[in-house]
Image 1 (tube, rainbow over the protein chains, first blue to last red):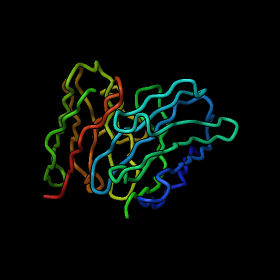
Image 2 (cartoon, each protein chain N blue to C red):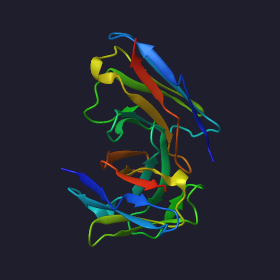
Image 3 (cartoon, rainbow over the protein chains, first blue to last red):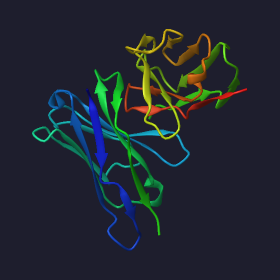
Image 4 (spheres, rainbow over the protein chains, first blue to last red):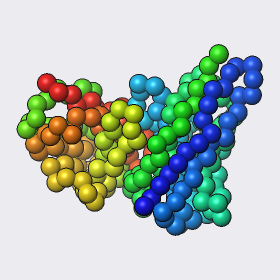
Amino acid sequence: EVQLVESGGGLVQPGGSLSLRLSCAASGFTFSSYWMHWVRQAPGKGLLWVSRINSDGSRTDYADSVKGRFTISRDNAKNTLYLQMNSLRAEDTAVYFCARDYREMALDYWGQGTLVTVSS
Amino acid sequence: DIQMTQSPSTLSASVGDRVTITCRASQSISRWLAWYQQKPGKAPKLLIYKASTLESGVPSRFSGSGSGTEFTLTISSLQPDDFATYYCQQCYSPWTFGQGTNVEIK
């Protein structure tokens, strides 16, 4: 059974560290064979695609709204996907989902999401 | 970036109704379009990819059509489990979602 489990979310307060690293632990499939994505959803809002990474980590893409601040990476030995988020802003407050790419045509499996809150 | 516009934003319907949601792309995306269903507090669920291919396990009352810039998701006979929010997503470059269509009980 394919499982994706996100962790690392939490409250980030202005004046403190404005960085957070999210993790997504994958199981039930050959992680190293798949592109992976991060998608976020602000409270009460729609889905926003954030970033993707290819199977060996050599190619990454980002939405304009996070480019230069967020870094996607992966550790295929640990079956884990990461999202390093720096210079966080209030507008980054959202549930962050990791998702598996299906042949660059869709996202076929999703985690349950982890909430990131940037607020005083 | 390619913008995706869904209509309507909200749709009120009854069980048994035929429902159609439209998604328009700001430029041609060929057939690189997927549809998802999301219920409150849950992750999205893939329904259709490549504009019209039904994901395994998805009921056949769901269908997708279109190419280029205009696409539709149709539910042939709305069931109680179908009341949810639906999103289109273009997988051309870079990936973007529509703003969502909330299908609510009439």
